[in-house]
View 1 (cartoon, rainbow, N blue to C red):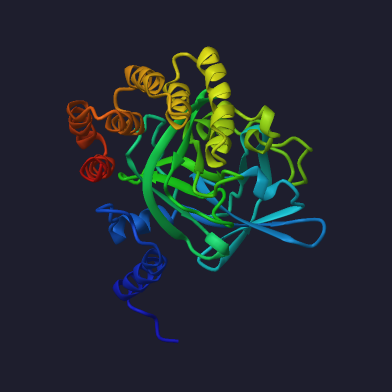
View 2 (cartoon, rainbow, N blue to C red):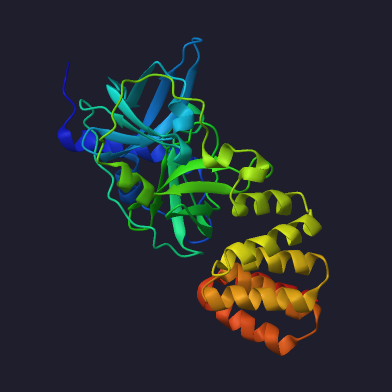
Length: 345
């Protein structure tokens, strides 16, 4: 068989990797070049978890250290054996380390020769561009681009809510910043509104990398992840997302008031309170809550945007223009939406 020249082989590989990219249109001007995509995709692998009942759970994983992948425990929790796949090659996971509560499982696959992702950190900003890569529907790796919508302090890390859409098979994939650094693990969408997409912080991955609790691959205990708990036991931010999705604003107000008491230094709690007041037509209270959120986080685009909408409802054009100026430096899209609303008002 004639061997393909090395340079031609590289071009063919790059083209094959580029194909999934064409399936996703990135928002605005957040185009990603093929070189960056190839770098990111090279670190993401397909996970096949083989269950006792004969079924196979499909997910994604990211190489985070030589021979070590991170994925979600909800992908592998029932598995009696796990295989990781890349470019037609398969390797067996020899051991695993599980943190079921945080939904992070580390797989020990020493034979896997796959590049290791470069770590970022939890110092993200709302509005920042990010890219999610995973094996959507078992195919891929596929990429979607979007922005950070919100950051939620939880258990020593920051849960990342983004506009990067993903579906079944992407769980355990990577969330990367524009520099190609791993900043999160793609994990779940809200049970009531599939437009709410959440990733786990990379700091949780880093804190588990000592691999001191390796065990044989076997079904995990009955414990569930924090986001799979019954509604009343979920973190405040997930309860708030559920109430907002179903427009239950009176209940949202009650929850947000409790949240603000328990976490008074959390800008998200005051944003939730502002939304509840705003939708209940309590504009003065909404302004006060949004101002509190902005005082705690002056770079919070959604708080500024909602504040501008309330001012618009009150006919305070000068205040709306001031908000637009601030928004212009934080999120041009939201700033334009507010300007459009001002024009139509």
